[in-house]
Image (cartoon, rainbow, N blue to C red; front, side, top):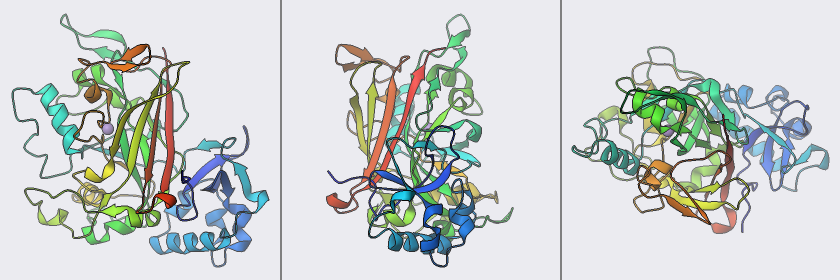
Length: 394
Ligand code: MN
């Protein structure tokens, strides 16, 4: 099997070589994290402070031409392998958040996911609300609780709905959401000046995997009329490695046709679907992992550039480090849905695992999301690594 982190991929991350060591900006190559500061002398024309850094923050604050020069310099410097002193084995390196997360927005861009949830919660009406095909629906989330892969997730406590009124206690319907996310870079647009669709690409630095943990009972009770709040804000997990947009050029495909045609500001000609294979594995405590979902990001209805353009269309600034997530990615077939609530149809059809079953997540369960793009060539796949989290009881 082709490995995730080839020279054509070269994703960026921030790792500690050992517990207590400071976080350092790295790229992943093969089975190593390669510290960029140790390569500084081999990167002609690259300002030292961009690579001698704890994470991606300084690089995100530059611009697309700087990202492209650095990537070319790194590929040249690493063409014959990485120097030993720059390498830390990935299996021992401790991942940190790759950048300081700014504003966090989560969308609802999968037609299948929005349709499934509409059918479950509003069985007597049209599954899609009237706005859904006209704009990428989203909400502003809580950036301060975005955590890196491997961080344990404490089961949230809150108000749960019931026939006799709400009760207070641990969520009984804890779920995951399989999502693809991207991080913004480049000079911010001024307040009051929307980002036009032809400039959106220059603001997208790269992509990651994201698990938008969701407490469905808390969410169902609190969400009307202002949308997701405590059922979502307790934790969001992010994969450690940012795959540069440049590495995903061969993975770009036409996204599904949009009917009706969106308003003028959301129209563009470029292919912005991303051919990224995605898998979710559930591992009950002390047992083997089971793959519970397989899908692909290419069928997402609303594209990353449409999400970005819409988010700034009212004149809101979008700044380096802002995080945009796709929304749960679900396919049309059984077993291709990106959440437990869909996979078990609101808990009515439990998932059968070896000797046990699940409707929602239990304490001790580990969820691992992996992703990779075939990039038109199975020997040179572009891997995202994994985002993993284990549920702790309260
Ligand atoms: Mn979500």
